[in-house]
Length: 107
Length: 121
Image 1 (cartoon, rainbow over the protein chains, first blue to last red):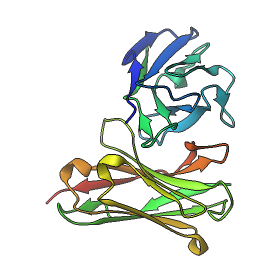
Image 2: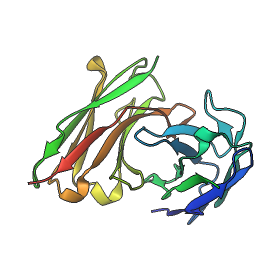
Image 3: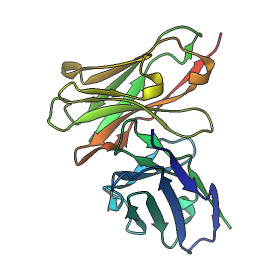
């Protein structure tokens, strides 16, 4: 199965600044990559699919890029509600697999 | 409005079989391209995809649990059922029912609130 590695595990950034989260696949997943945001006590929310397509209702400050094995989620101008956990997930090969997550914390 | 909701027992004993039901609305699982998956998340840990069933009845299961999982659908009731046999304490988790988006069925745009299942004797 494809292993998804997210880095860093915890990212400290100041509100208003930009955050860059990384996700690496153990083999190519083409552009079949999604990003999710999870707030405490809630189900995850889809942010990005197809590596760079924003899901419905997702603000433009969330952007995804990459293909193959290297992917990035960029959050520009961080707001207080953005300091939660983010997961990447590949859906190019069975079984679908998730990364362990990156926790975005206030610096 | 698309919604999904999981239901099932909160407590299960080791070796028992877990049956979870996902009841959804706002879409039809008989429509081409539609699919529903189950995902779980142990407390404080990451997400794990378990199984998917498609509009045409095609099924996929995670490799490590393939022998324990069954997924089925009742289109007339708008329900998807997941059964997991031989439950163990390590299966304690929140179980989510999710819809795959038609453009990319492996990405999940609508999630149920989740149901917490604890495996304990």
